[in-house]
Image 1 (cartoon, rainbow, N blue to C red):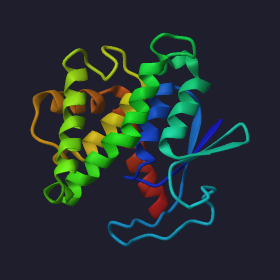
Image 2 (cartoon, rainbow, N blue to C red):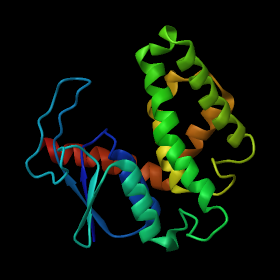
Image 3 (cartoon, one colour):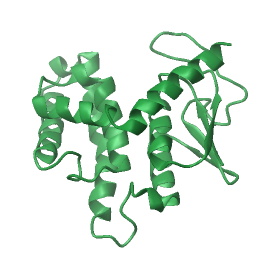
Image 4 (tube, rainbow, N blue to C red):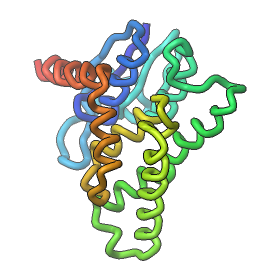
Length: 203
């Protein structure tokens, strides 16, 4: 059994989506977190995350935290779901590259766009433009970042892009990708479960 420590409408929401894609038994343990953007919420003593943040999972006695680590761990732990090329697969390097790119490039560009920092730095503007072109180039070749095969890299990239869509310019390819990701049956179920966990946390 996998236990997800989860706060609604947070970074752990995409892990609910991932777990639905994996089609394995799991449970959601709602926890409260401090939300810096609003100043609301308090750290939950029941949350095993060392920093009292989300996401965090427990699986077979192991604690895994941070979205990238959880995505890598779960996709490899449940290979039958087909969300990650196996070690030795020629596509493995590209898959790992996209996940690293999400963490090192997309997130920085997203928050630069959201914060207004682009206007202050020509370098950030160039980096932001490069992120958009890299993603557009991939999506011009297929439905997802690795072509027509959906992988757990799309959970990270698709959820981030949906959250911060207005941090990037209007673009039909990006809009179609976001819609494709959020229209997946597992993503739709994830939204419902996210809402339900919010009601549980408020009860």
